[in-house]
Length: 150
Ligand SMILES: Cc1cc2nc3c(=O)[nH]c(=O)nc-3n(C[C@H](O)[C@H](O)[C@H](O)COP(=O)(O)O)c2cc1C
Image 1 (spheres, rainbow, N blue to C red):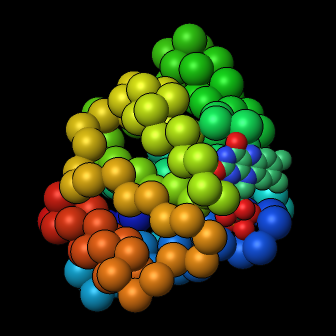
Image 2: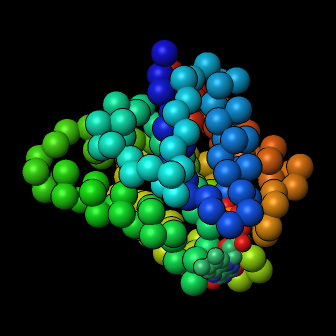
């Protein structure tokens, strides 16, 4: 069964977590096994990343940038790549973010995660708690990611 990793940071209100849950629901509907990792709770083991067939990255907007936990992941990713670890590039990936009204994280997020591989779907942004249409878009992203690795 293909594995979709959902790597996100959620800390303040659980808003990004709610979006991650919806992506996970869609990926399961699409037939994938799902691993949800909140960087506020744990640092991702790079082996988990390498074994994922597709990934969704989710961040809150922190000062118009990604959350520190995801920056730590990108640093770990680069160091592993420099050590010639395989399974780090060319993954299908999707993006989602939560914000408080500014939402300027979209641009740095798209730029930073472009190194992950091939983007699937549109970047999904939600102000505060995701509404029904945003949750539906997250579920669709999950299904698209599962479909991309069948
Ligand atoms: C330290 C910090 C910085 C933030 N900076 C911004 C910002 O620059 N722009 C913005 O739109 N929202 C900003 N916010 C609001 C969060 O992005 C927003 O509340 C988000 O939904 C929190 O996600 P979470 O509940 O998953 O932690 C900030 C919140 C915190 C805690």
